Image 1: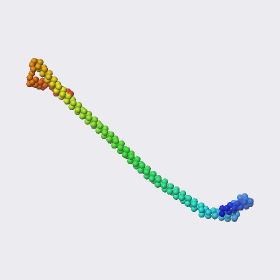
Image 2: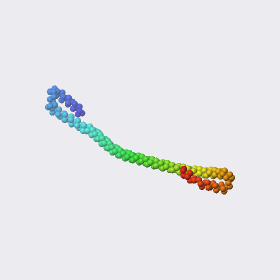
Image 3: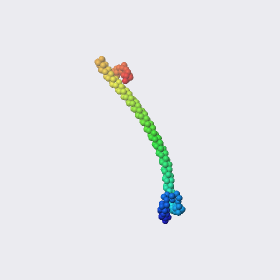
Image 4: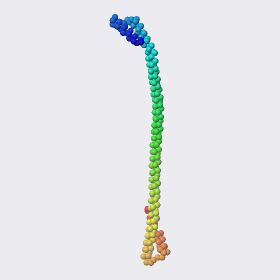
Length: 192
Protein backbone atom coordinates (compact mmCIF):
# COMPACT_ATOMS: atom_id res chain seq x y z
CA UNK A 1 0.00 0.00 0.00
CA UNK A 2 1.41 3.35 -0.97
CA UNK A 3 0.09 5.20 2.11
CA UNK A 4 2.05 2.94 4.48
CA UNK A 5 5.18 3.21 2.35
CA UNK A 6 4.76 6.98 2.38
CA UNK A 7 4.69 6.92 6.15
CA UNK A 8 7.84 4.79 6.30
CA UNK A 9 9.61 7.06 3.88
CA UNK A 10 8.55 10.13 5.75
CA UNK A 11 9.69 8.71 9.07
CA UNK A 12 13.09 7.70 7.68
CA UNK A 13 13.58 11.07 6.05
CA UNK A 14 12.55 12.83 9.20
CA UNK A 15 14.94 10.88 11.38
CA UNK A 16 17.89 11.39 9.04
CA UNK A 17 17.10 15.03 8.46
CA UNK A 18 16.65 15.87 12.05
CA UNK A 19 20.01 14.49 12.82
CA UNK A 20 21.81 16.57 10.18
CA UNK A 21 20.19 19.95 10.72
CA UNK A 22 16.99 21.16 12.15
CA UNK A 23 14.93 22.71 9.30
CA UNK A 24 17.36 22.82 6.41
CA UNK A 25 15.79 19.83 4.66
CA UNK A 26 12.74 21.97 3.82
CA UNK A 27 14.86 24.64 2.26
CA UNK A 28 17.19 22.32 0.40
CA UNK A 29 15.26 19.14 -0.11
CA UNK A 30 16.98 16.00 -1.13
CA UNK A 31 16.31 14.22 -4.37
CA UNK A 32 14.92 11.13 -2.64
CA UNK A 33 12.46 13.16 -0.66
CA UNK A 34 11.23 14.85 -3.81
CA UNK A 35 10.77 11.62 -5.66
CA UNK A 36 8.92 10.00 -2.80
CA UNK A 37 6.74 13.07 -2.36
CA UNK A 38 5.89 13.00 -6.07
CA UNK A 39 5.18 9.27 -6.02
CA UNK A 40 2.95 9.55 -2.94
CA UNK A 41 1.19 12.62 -4.36
CA UNK A 42 0.62 10.90 -7.71
CA UNK A 43 -0.65 7.74 -6.03
CA UNK A 44 -2.94 9.75 -3.79
CA UNK A 45 -4.27 11.72 -6.76
CA UNK A 46 -4.87 8.52 -8.73
CA UNK A 47 -6.72 6.95 -5.80
CA UNK A 48 -8.76 10.07 -5.21
CA UNK A 49 -9.46 10.38 -8.94
CA UNK A 50 -10.48 6.76 -9.23
CA UNK A 51 -12.59 6.41 -6.07
CA UNK A 52 -13.25 9.67 -4.23
CA UNK A 53 -13.73 12.25 -7.01
CA UNK A 54 -16.50 10.33 -8.85
CA UNK A 55 -18.35 9.82 -5.58
CA UNK A 56 -17.86 13.48 -4.68
CA UNK A 57 -18.85 14.53 -8.21
CA UNK A 58 -21.97 12.34 -8.04
CA UNK A 59 -22.87 13.68 -4.58
CA UNK A 60 -22.33 17.26 -5.77
CA UNK A 61 -24.37 16.54 -8.92
CA UNK A 62 -27.20 15.08 -6.87
CA UNK A 63 -26.98 18.03 -4.50
CA UNK A 64 -26.98 20.46 -7.43
CA UNK A 65 -29.93 18.64 -9.00
CA UNK A 66 -31.87 18.67 -5.71
CA UNK A 67 -31.10 22.39 -5.25
CA UNK A 68 -32.21 23.11 -8.84
CA UNK A 69 -35.35 21.03 -8.28
CA UNK A 70 -35.99 22.90 -5.03
CA UNK A 71 -35.50 26.23 -6.83
CA UNK A 72 -37.83 25.11 -9.63
CA UNK A 73 -40.39 23.91 -7.11
CA UNK A 74 -40.09 27.14 -5.16
CA UNK A 75 -40.53 29.14 -8.38
CA UNK A 76 -43.58 27.08 -9.36
CA UNK A 77 -44.95 27.44 -5.85
CA UNK A 78 -44.35 31.21 -5.95
CA UNK A 79 -46.09 31.45 -9.34
CA UNK A 80 -49.00 29.36 -8.04
CA UNK A 81 -49.13 31.46 -4.86
CA UNK A 82 -49.18 34.64 -6.95
CA UNK A 83 -51.97 33.18 -9.09
CA UNK A 84 -53.91 32.15 -5.97
CA UNK A 85 -53.34 35.56 -4.44
CA UNK A 86 -54.61 37.24 -7.60
CA UNK A 87 -57.60 34.87 -7.64
CA UNK A 88 -58.33 35.56 -3.96
CA UNK A 89 -58.04 39.29 -4.56
CA UNK A 90 -60.51 38.98 -7.45
CA UNK A 91 -62.85 36.93 -5.27
CA UNK A 92 -62.51 39.45 -2.46
CA UNK A 93 -63.20 42.28 -4.90
CA UNK A 94 -66.22 40.40 -6.25
CA UNK A 95 -67.41 39.65 -2.70
CA UNK A 96 -67.06 43.33 -1.79
CA UNK A 97 -68.99 44.25 -4.92
CA UNK A 98 -71.71 41.76 -4.03
CA UNK A 99 -71.80 43.04 -0.46
CA UNK A 100 -72.14 46.62 -1.69
CA UNK A 101 -74.86 45.50 -4.10
CA UNK A 102 -76.69 43.68 -1.30
CA UNK A 103 -76.43 46.75 0.93
CA UNK A 104 -77.68 48.96 -1.91
CA UNK A 105 -80.59 46.60 -2.60
CA UNK A 106 -81.39 46.46 1.11
CA UNK A 107 -81.39 50.26 1.28
CA UNK A 108 -83.64 50.48 -1.76
CA UNK A 109 -85.96 47.83 -0.31
CA UNK A 110 -86.05 49.69 3.00
CA UNK A 111 -86.81 52.97 1.23
CA UNK A 112 -89.53 51.29 -0.84
CA UNK A 113 -90.93 49.63 2.26
CA UNK A 114 -90.89 52.98 4.05
CA UNK A 115 -92.65 54.67 1.11
CA UNK A 116 -95.20 51.86 0.95
CA UNK A 117 -95.77 52.11 4.70
CA UNK A 118 -96.22 55.88 4.44
CA UNK A 119 -98.59 55.48 1.50
CA UNK A 120 -100.51 52.76 3.32
CA UNK A 121 -100.75 54.98 6.40
CA UNK A 122 -101.94 57.90 4.27
CA UNK A 123 -104.48 55.69 2.51
CA UNK A 124 -105.64 54.32 5.86
CA UNK A 125 -105.89 57.86 7.24
CA UNK A 126 -107.88 58.94 4.16
CA UNK A 127 -110.14 55.91 4.53
CA UNK A 128 -110.67 56.66 8.20
CA UNK A 129 -111.30 60.31 7.40
CA UNK A 130 -113.84 59.36 4.72
CA UNK A 131 -115.44 56.85 7.05
CA UNK A 132 -115.61 59.46 9.79
CA UNK A 133 -117.14 62.02 7.42
CA UNK A 134 -119.67 59.42 6.27
CA UNK A 135 -120.47 58.48 9.87
CA UNK A 136 -120.90 62.15 10.78
CA UNK A 137 -123.18 62.68 7.78
CA UNK A 138 -125.27 59.62 8.66
CA UNK A 139 -125.49 60.72 12.28
CA UNK A 140 -126.42 64.25 11.19
CA UNK A 141 -129.21 62.93 8.98
CA UNK A 142 -130.43 60.68 11.75
CA UNK A 143 -130.35 63.57 14.22
CA UNK A 144 -132.23 65.81 11.79
CA UNK A 145 -134.80 63.07 11.27
CA UNK A 146 -135.17 62.72 15.04
CA UNK A 147 -135.50 66.48 15.38
CA UNK A 148 -138.15 66.54 12.64
CA UNK A 149 -140.06 63.77 14.38
CA UNK A 150 -139.78 65.61 17.66
CA UNK A 151 -140.85 68.89 16.06
CA UNK A 152 -143.77 67.13 14.45
CA UNK A 153 -144.86 65.64 17.75
CA UNK A 154 -144.43 68.96 19.52
CA UNK A 155 -146.32 70.78 16.79
CA UNK A 156 -149.21 68.36 17.00
CA UNK A 157 -149.32 68.70 20.76
CA UNK A 158 -149.13 72.47 20.56
CA UNK A 159 -151.86 72.60 17.94
CA UNK A 160 -154.13 70.38 19.98
CA UNK A 161 -153.65 72.55 23.01
CA UNK A 162 -154.22 75.74 21.04
CA UNK A 163 -157.23 74.55 19.20
CA UNK A 164 -158.35 72.21 21.95
CA UNK A 165 -159.38 69.67 19.56
CA UNK A 166 -157.89 66.72 17.85
CA UNK A 167 -156.90 67.24 14.30
CA UNK A 168 -157.60 64.76 11.63
CA UNK A 169 -154.70 63.22 9.75
CA UNK A 170 -154.92 65.60 6.78
CA UNK A 171 -154.88 68.65 9.04
CA UNK A 172 -151.96 67.20 11.01
CA UNK A 173 -149.98 66.50 7.90
CA UNK A 174 -150.60 69.99 6.48
CA UNK A 175 -149.59 71.69 9.72
CA UNK A 176 -146.45 69.58 10.09
CA UNK A 177 -145.35 70.27 6.56
CA UNK A 178 -145.86 74.00 7.02
CA UNK A 179 -143.85 73.94 10.23
CA UNK A 180 -141.09 71.97 8.67
CA UNK A 181 -140.89 74.34 5.76
CA UNK A 182 -140.51 77.19 8.14
CA UNK A 183 -137.56 75.52 9.92
CA UNK A 184 -134.16 75.75 8.24
CA UNK A 185 -132.52 72.32 8.70
CA UNK A 186 -129.78 73.00 6.14
CA UNK A 187 -128.10 75.35 8.59
CA UNK A 188 -127.97 72.50 11.13
CA UNK A 189 -126.25 70.09 8.74
CA UNK A 190 -123.72 72.67 7.52
CA UNK A 191 -122.67 73.54 11.08
CA UNK A 192 -121.21 70.07 11.52
